[in-house]
Image 1 (cartoon, chains in turn orange, cyan):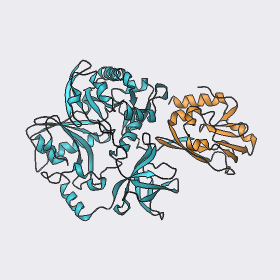
Image 2 (image 1 turned 30 degrees about the vertical axis):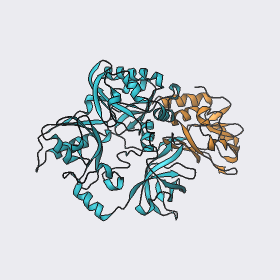
Image 3 (image 1 turned 30 degrees about the horizontal axis):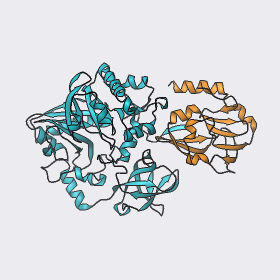
Amino acid sequence: MSYPTDRKYTKEHEWITADGAIGITSHAQDSLGDIVFVELPKVGTEISSGKTFGTVESVKAVSDLYAPVSGTVTAVNESLATAPEQVNKDAHGAWMLKIKIKDPAEMNALLSAADYEKFASEEAGH
Amino acid sequence: MSVVEATPLAAPQNVRKTALNAVHRQMGAKMVEFSGWDMPVEYPAAIGCGIVNEHMAVRTGVGIFDVSHMGDIRLAGREALAAVQHISMNDASRLAIGQAQYSALLYPQGTFVDDVIVHRLGEDEYLLVINAGTREKDFNWVRDNVRDNTRQFDCKVEHLSDDFTQIAIQGPKAVDLLQKLTDADLSAVKFYWVTRGSLCGLKNILMGRTGYTAEDGFEIYIPSDEETSARVWYAILDAGKEFGAVPCGLGARNTLRLEGKLPLYGHEISDTINVWEAGLDRFCKMEKPDFIGRAALEQAKAQGLKKTLVGLEMVDRGIARDGYKVLDNGGREIGYVTSGSPAPFLKKNIALAYVPPEQAAIGNTVQVEIRGQGVKAQVVPTPFYKRPKKS
């Protein structure tokens, strides 16, 4: 599996681009299975680093989404409400939120594509 | 994101494996612990699987399940019928040789030890197919009640669970698939009847037209050595290619049985829920000779129901999950969800729930509490799905 290098990753399997687009990783969608429901905050909501900002549900499981960094929601991908399977088809293209990042320095604490890939493959090996 | 299982299960001390365990892993299945067993929950998207695809294959074509974790108890001997009558709630005297029935083992309180399928295999020979998580409990319970201080039935009780690899072939194309592999005339076998025949070179294999998917299909019982189990599994998949057969895991098994309102032990039925509450009246024959649980059920019937099992369909956006609270329209807690999931074939979010009888009318609206919010749901007729009658 290849992870785009234009963004950073979390150990909770979210990704975030430098301009604040957030989604979940290909590894995450694969372990969840068929995604049927995504619940996201409204534009204007403040989200804070490491705290939950939404929920993603597959047929069998409910999972919380965690904010990679703090910021204010500027856009929500409304198409996921009716077509959540986009996350399975293209996890790295199907953004969920766009945020205005509060402190860009917080990005430095996140994983690079290579580090995340290593982390995810170790986790999958368990 | 952190994956939280919607149905948390107690961590078993020893995880058991079926004879097909290595095959599932080789096929890339996602494995989970279920009732102490290491079982496939779904197979990979790369081979056309995943819960939704597996579910749809069973509704429209055919799917193959390893259900070897199910248990088997054989009762044989002069008083086998009397013993089966004593320990189960359906009327086994109605079974012809080769016929099967849905039934349950009950505690004296009228609550469930387990639900079972009773097969009559011979004049004085019965096979009970029981659930994985209740294997030992069921066997001990059957053995102890067939021979207790007051009554000893002249009948042998054997635990055969480890003798069989049990494979379910389910879906409208299941008969066509299995017929390619056996000399038995499957078209002559009615629903809930069994036959025997050769299969993949094995002689005298038991094949029952039963299942847990609300679809037509067979369950077969083959020797449980790994080599034979793998050979037959791959032969079935291979023969199923022309019908689009896919392997199916416990994820699809659960959504299929939920659409058909088939109860799951520990959810719709348990040692605290009685037969009337679970709505299984038609499988409980009060007029047959006495059986364990009968007296308590008589009393419970006279007292009336405190809760009853209903089908819910979500009206507003949200998915009810096992254990979620059911609220009335004023936000007061009135019951709980026993099983809830998206229904892949019906494309609705459905649930089974216990509510007071006065809230159980079809069309009544209630709320399911999802992450602290009441989400509107409606009581609907069940089963949610009924397979179309063959023309």
